[in-house]
Length: 608
Image (cartoon, rainbow, N blue to C red; front, side, top):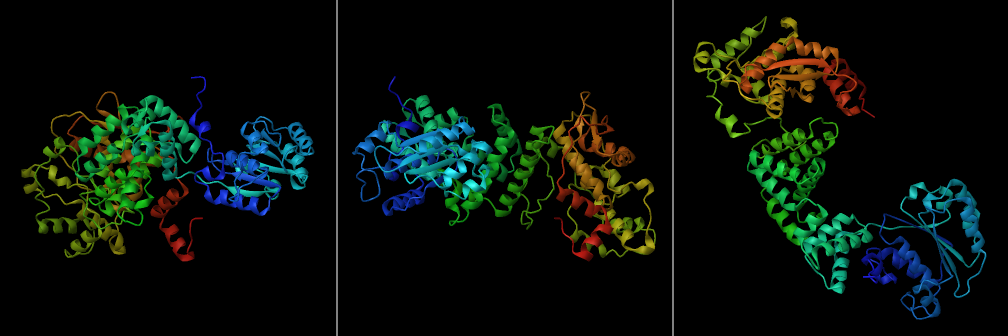
């Protein structure tokens, strides 16, 4: 027990050939030693645990070796090499700049530089975390670093090169160490496991390598931790349990549910993940990575970009064959948008659930979209909601009545019925025909026009200068469901869905208002019948109050609750507010201002 040494120290490389993942740098250093072209100052920079200090020690040992090997390595048998291995060499001095960063510490170092070596040719000074030196210490070190004695060589190591003064950088040869690849880390851990007599699974080592994030020291430390937990037999399941890593299987299962439009299973799986203690944003970023891996698996040339075991890669290739590129594009965009809005959301779980619901409906979209603009169409979600839908509207089955109703909405002139087909071809389909909620008797007695027909009347009215007409009190025209069944409980999920459905049903003249409504998230109050909407400005609050009766009637019918009541108020300082980027503000202004659009087109302006 007393003689136990952690793997990160026990298996620390002692020669250039045993350094993992830095072949280019070690070859350069060996060639410099063989040719005798040694610089007086080196800067080793890179992430933590990739071998900066280790290579500095090996370099110091090799240049002082009394019998160097033909391949540029130290012999390991001479007095200088033995003194280095036994940590009693006076030719190597290490300084931790994190705790010795003052001018006095640098002056003491400069005094030691003047003393020549007792054995060997050079005295090597390794300054670790050199970026922690103060500005005064850097300035005191400049002259010595530029013109040191012939026997002195400085090796500076840092993880943050950008914090070092340019005057220091210009006096050093700079070597940039790279992160360890997953394959290199797994291969090294296999060798360590063989020497320690530990049986391992490749999938388990792959998880350890990904957890280490390119650092070999971190990988060996995690390996020791998992080995202690597993008792000499490291398995994949024990590894993810010990490291609290989300299993690949969850993402594969969720993707199958998305393809099968199984929304209930998606919600239950998310609940299982959150119950196990995984944070929502960690889950959504992992889902984004899963979609990315599926996308690159569809091409043999990019399949190697997946950092996973061969077994997992085969699963990716198998599932990728069942996924359309359009589905993956849209799913990646939805998950990325959820990740961006996660910290700003007041109801984070609801945000993830809405994202999963939309993903589960992507596979049924037969459109030819490239994925840059995912459709906002929402299909029936749960079986209960599908069961309450009534028969299709008979009003849309009567084209003559529809055309007649369209003509009546214009104030002047005659509307040709042939314009209806052209308009439908250029419009996005509505979320769901609102006339389907009318009883059959009402449909036959008084056909209701569809949302598309009413929006066509707005388009014709605005396109003809001779037929312009102001809408009374600026209230939009849309199909309004009137059937209200028995009162049913309402939750925030369904409330938000129907709220956004109402916003998307608004005509084009109310695009700005629809966008603001789509951003908001109404919240049910404790009484179960009142929901609160917080407006960002008085103008929008006034607009909401004008159409409040229509909103309440629409939501009462859709959610089957006649007691629903909307309350509004202005956003206060203590309320969390959604942050907009410059691009979002710019696009919103373009949609609201015709003059701004003309100005941009005239002068070919772009957002800087």
